[in-house]
Structures are given as structure tokens and as C-alpha cells.
Length: 266
Image 1 (cartoon, rainbow, N blue to C red):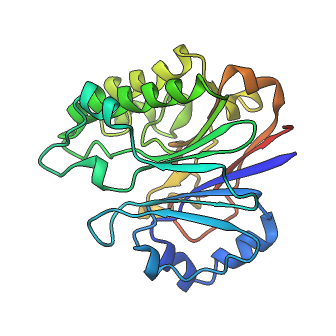
Image 2 (cartoon, rainbow, N blue to C red):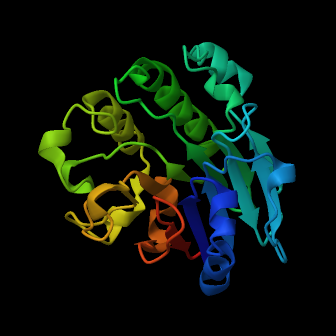
């Protein structure tokens, strides 16, 4: 069995300063941990890594974005960002906010039996000004990349996808319809993953609403579980039968997101 976790930490240094990262690692003992929104350069990240191989992919802009993979088993290889032919083919060139290819948003790690990809998907922004990037460039590029890796080995991908797929994935769907994270464009981008054969692992085990991974800091939203599910584990169809559990760890604090996990018999 292998247990893989994903967590948007909203600043790894902040979680460390709250003394919440080490207790999480000690309690959960992940075989692999994927992090998003690390908001730090590698030299600024002082976390105990005993027993783990660690790969950090930081944004060029300091204190922004960033991803990481920590694993007990050393990956066969790690790849940062999209391949150049996908960037050029889908014109993933960025917008007024910058070039997402320079923001440390994607790491692919190859293991013996699968590719693991972690992603921190660009936020559409309150005024939806990044919807064109998401809809026309980023989401198609990410799907194309995962399908390309899948030609070699089955793929597990995880991270903050910055979208609630269905009305069951957020507490208040009606007032949020058409707003960032719940636009038709973002939701169709997620649906394209499923249509391409990837499986939303949590929905193999749990149906309905109430399963959220992010909560606003306002109005005690987390206490009341008024949240959104925007963090996911998806797997290739070939791995579906090997998924033994998928979970949301809402009891783990330190970020406005909570960790999620998938357990594979592989």
C-alpha cells in the first residue's frame, strides 16, 4: 500500500511557524506528500526531511505560488513545468498577471509503477480576468501533459485545481454560479479530465455534499463547514481498481485548505 497526500499549505513557512507541519507528518506518515502554494524559495524552506527525498519548484517571483514533492522513495526522475512543445502548441504564454510557466506550478515525478503530477492551477481572479488563460491555455495544457505521461505509465495527479466541479462540491452553489471557481469554463475544464478517462477518487467512496477542502477565513466558515472542494486526486482508469481509499483530512489545520489523500494498492 502507498499513501499519497496533497496539501495547499498557503505558505510553508507559515505552517511551520504555527508548529503544525511536523505533527501532521508524524501523525499521517505519508509515503508521498505533494504541496502547493509553498510561497518560498528552496533556501527559505527549513523543514525536517528525515527519511524523505524533497523536490521544490519555486516561482521566479518570491513569496508566490510554488509546489513541492516529498517522498520516502526517490523518484526515478522529476520534471518541472510543461514540456516546451505543449507550451508552444497551446500558447501557454500568460497574461497581464504574468507567465504561469514561471510560477512553479507543476511537478511530475516518475515512480516505478506510475507518474505522479502535482499542480497549483492559476486562480481565475474575482473579476474572472484569468478565465481566458484557464479555459484556452492552462487546463487544456495540463490535460494534454497528463495524457502524454499516461502513454508511458498510469498517472496520479493531485493538487489545488481551483474549481468546484459540481454543485455538490461547494456549500452554496446558487449564489456562486458564474463566480471564480464555479464558472462554466472552469467546470468544463474539470469535466474534460473525466471525459479523458481520469477518475475523481473521492467520488469512488463518498457522494453528496459536505466534503470540502477550502474555507474562507470569514464568518467562521470552517467551523460551520461552509466550504468548497477544490483540491483533488485523480487517477488513470488503469489505476481505478487499485484505489483503496480517498479522504479529506479536515481535522488538520495550518492553512485555509486541508490535506487530502489517496491510498493505492500498488
